[in-house]
Amino acid sequence: MRKQAFILLCVVVLGVVGTCHGGGLKKNYYASKCRDAEEIIKNATEKRVAIDPTLPAKFLRMHFHDCFVRGCDASVLVNSTANNTAEKDAVPNQTLGGFSVIDDIKAEVEKKCPNVVSCADVLALAARDAVSSKFKRPLWEVLTGRRDGRVSRISEALANIPSPFSNFTTLVQNFANHSLNVRDLVVLSGAHTIGVSHCSGFFNRLYNFTGKGDQDPSLNATYAAFLKTRCKSPTDNTTITPMDPITSLTFDSNYYVVLKQKRGLFQSDAALLTNGGSSNLVNQLLNQNKFFAEFAQSIKKMGAIGVLTGNAGEIRKKCFAIN
Ligand code: HEM
Ligand SMILES: *[C@@H]1O[C@H](CO)[C@@H](O)[C@H](O)[C@H]1NC(C)=O
Ligand SMILES: *[C@@H]1O[C@H](CO)[C@@H](O)[C@H](O)[C@H]1NC(C)=O
Ligand SMILES: *[C@@H]1O[C@H](CO)[C@@H](O)[C@H](O)[C@H]1NC(C)=O
Ligand SMILES: *[C@@H]1O[C@H](CO)[C@@H](O)[C@H](O)[C@H]1NC(C)=O
Ligand SMILES: *[C@@H]1O[C@H](CO)[C@@H](O)[C@H](O)[C@H]1NC(C)=O
Ligand SMILES: *[C@@H]1O[C@H](CO)[C@@H](O)[C@H](O)[C@H]1NC(C)=O
Ligand SMILES: *[C@@H]1O[C@H](CO)[C@@H](O)[C@H](O)[C@H]1NC(C)=O
Ligand SMILES: *[C@@H]1O[C@H](CO)[C@@H](O)[C@H](O)[C@H]1NC(C)=O
Ligand SMILES: CC(=O)N[C@H]1CO[C@H](CO)[C@@H](O)[C@@H]1O
Image (cartoon, rainbow, N blue to C red; front, side):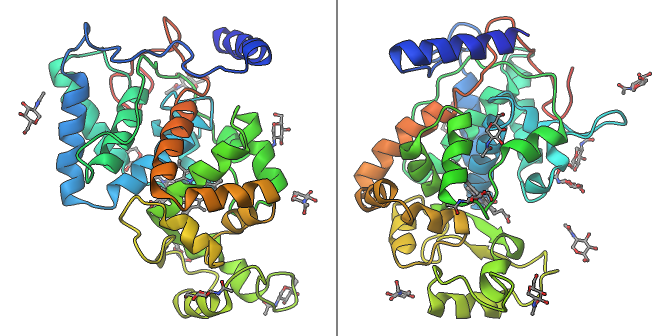
């Protein structure tokens, strides 16, 4: 109820002043409540990333999936129970990873400041700190003060997480549903500069695109031939393929270089070239400084979607279970 009221307020404010980020979040919200919270999270995250370089991609995608379903309220972290099938068990979530590491990082914060720091903030900070760890500086600002939701439903994940088979129109609509615009869509898709995909996300583009045994003409033919050597069967659910074939562990603007070579892995990536304005943005984002500056703005906006603040929701004790 409280959240619906907030969203309504948000829509009204959006209409009037054209901005609705922040949503009650603050810079260094925990300064007086748990002075070292952000540093504990940063230290714990960097320690884990040093051991597992695939974590930045996992955390970044998890933060995205969290924010797109019920706002950034850690609903993605909750386990299913006898009575409820949670977001985690939805098809798009089956390939998420890193949950246990988030649970561990939260446990470290709890040791110092029990019941103070939300799982939603832990995830938002850990995603930023993991991606930034190679840069020795935070790549974007994370406002804090999010609270954790008490609801996580499989049906809501299915309705809100965009599909890799989406065209431009559908993607724009999906992002608009989350108060993000075309610029945010093109910029945030740049997250695919790190990480991997299973074959299911692009298999159709290789073998039977329109049901005539054909290939997606918008996919680079040389690259398609290479992808076919990796993904041979539609039931292959173990092979993973980097989305940025050149630097899949490095957060850079190479996603856009690859995209322009028609080597974007998903239809949803290739779709960004099917619209004039969007395609023009792709060209601008080839510039790494531009990409970093834009990404910092768009992900901050994403991190404020539908947040619970004040007395709404709860501070979860363990991220995998509602209190
Ligand atoms: C525009 C719509 C988007 C679609 C359709 C999409 C779809 C996908 C798919 C299908 C995968 C591969 C999952 C797998 O098979 O393992 C993936 C991976 C990934 N996505 Fe997206 N995504 C979108 C936007 C985003 C955004 C906005 C972010 C973050 C800001 C993001 C971050 C990532 C990351 C980092 C990975 C790699 C995960 C890993 O290596 O474990 N994506 N995405
Ligand atoms: C974080 O790590 C740094 C460098 O190792 C250390 O100096 C600092 O005390 C740590 N902070 C916390 C809160 O653990
Ligand atoms: C939560 O679910 C994950 C799989 O989604 C499982 O690995 C983990 O053990 C569960 N945690 C608890 C405490 O039940
Ligand atoms: C599940 O639902 C039943 C009946 O509505 C209730 O008695 C039980 O306490 C619930 N269990 C949990 C774990 O919420
Ligand atoms: C985009 O996809 C939607 C849903 O599949 C479809 O209804 C629509 O016709 C498509 N738009 C274009 C321009 O292909
Ligand atoms: C956008 O939200 C509306 C209303 O909730 C929903 O009907 C529609 O399917 C959503 N569109 C996309 C592309 O997610
Ligand atoms: C391609 O798709 C069509 C239509 O769905 C189907 O009839 C055909 O058997 C498929 N061909 C292959 C080689 O999978
Ligand atoms: C992968 O596919 C095999 C056989 O089709 C199935 O037994 C297994 O559960 C699947 N694994 C995952 C992670 O979905
Ligand atoms: C296909 O990819 C190769 C690099 O693998 C690139 O040199 C070539 O220009 C690309 N073709 C097109 C049409 O973009
Ligand atoms: C990471 C995770 O929780 N994956 C789950 C996704 O959903 C399937 C069932 O639909 C579970 O088996 C996975 O454990």
